[in-house]
Length: 324
Image (spheres, rainbow, N blue to C red):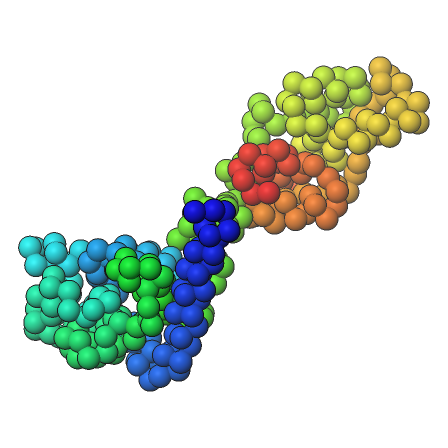
């Protein structure tokens, strides 16, 4: 056995599985695929996905993909189904059963019970003439010419084909339902997309004693102390009425030094930035990030409807939250 032989064997596997997936295109063009989609679209309950062995692993993944793309679904082990878990299936559901042979004993056993419940059955098999296929309202043929396993025993190409067919169902349903990025984010709140599309600045801002704040007549040197203590690289500046007058940032400090401003005698209103960008509570963190990015700033004051500062938001807050 040499390196080249190992590579040739691996390439043969990929080519075999690629052919198995490519063959699905002609199967999807058949009415049975559309019928399966319609059954799931019209389902008032859940899509119950089941399968044994390697098909069971694929079934679990298909159920997870359906659930995360707008089609409520869950996996039921067929062996457990005949020992009580069948109670998880209701007449409002649709069953999607995976079996390469279409004769898996644990699945065939529960077919009469599924029929008695009048639950629509979708089969995904490699044998269109099997018991499972004949019992189904829609049969998805995922048969393959051969397995990638040289012994022809280990499910390889067949499980790849079933997985691809499951993805085809999920995406077809996703598009038909008008499922959006926001919908996806709601079912993935812990993921990066969920954080970008769901996280509000309300959860990130610095308020109260942690918010850097000085008055317009504050000496620049004292404002620098406030900035240092609060560590946001800026301070909010308010007037005597408590309204936002401007901000002073690290960039403003550099410009003041360039103009040879005396930091010990100058007041903050002489060097602050007026008409600064602000944000309100309820804004998405991703929107605040877009403002910072487009204006090349690293911090934003958060104001209420009276233009009173109630918080401050820093680019590092967004970084820590995983929004960036």
